[in-house]
Length: 392
Ligand SMILES: O=C[C@H](O)COP(=O)(O)O
Image (cartoon, rainbow, N blue to C red; front, side, top):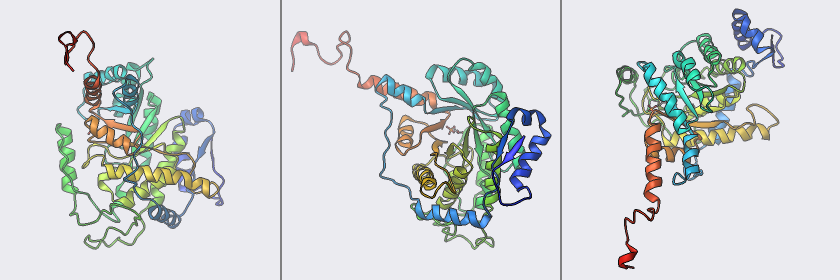
């Protein structure tokens, strides 16, 4: 049975209707979830806009702040690094063999998770039985524009199949159609599926012109320089975004870990902050940069901004008596194009706590090489000096 948060309205809100309809169509789920707490539409679009404007005004990326990173010259540090990695294969043409290899590599390396599409979740769950590696599944991949009901169906199917974490693609078009601000693209992929999506990205790209402020405060209308957009002064449909996120959270309660993929390459800083605000309000656990299939992946400045946003949004609730966001701090996952130990280290230094990468094996290999390179040679090898013949 579903119950909702206290609300001043008597008729059900759109979120309530959506979740109740979903449960009515899935009675087994309704019984399984028991007393679902529906996160209702808490604010009007104008109220969201006001709150988001405040976040945009207050939050700026702190480029000088460096977070501690695992010391990969130690065994413990290498283990810690591995535990940040979501070992990822999301190609449409991935084979069962590749998925099986992904799982056994994740077990061997001690990665946090394997991140796959829905069709491979149960295979991974059975491969990883008895290991601490969890299964993460993407939802709404990779465009994010599927309708909410479809995303709910996908999310629930993934949880039913055993996924512990869901990486949900934001419907970023709801933000960008008001202030389209594509960023420059120099991303190249190699598989056939990737090439197709890359072509789509290029086809959809609009001219870029001085539209991405590198530091706050950021406002939604800060896109200056674009061709005038008839919708420029309208407020993006924040309510629709929140409704989608909140209904996914309502039907996939904790301990399911929810990550929101913002697709930062498609957003300006103001839009990144708006999405972060709504993710926090809907109790998501992570904000994540990229799908890896649409424009460039994780950029340092975006990770820095998201980390600052997560920090601000977590303290905001404490300071204003419980509303409007929350007290638990979201984490940040850097994903897309993280292909080397150096890139991984930079993202962690910027405050990311999770890395989504298809290059996890290579990154670990580099970490081991670094550890070995710095180790003093064992006495038997005596590579650099020979005490028997004297020397300094
Ligand atoms: O979330 C994960 C990304 O799809 C991985 O992207 P990548 O292949 O560039 O590492």
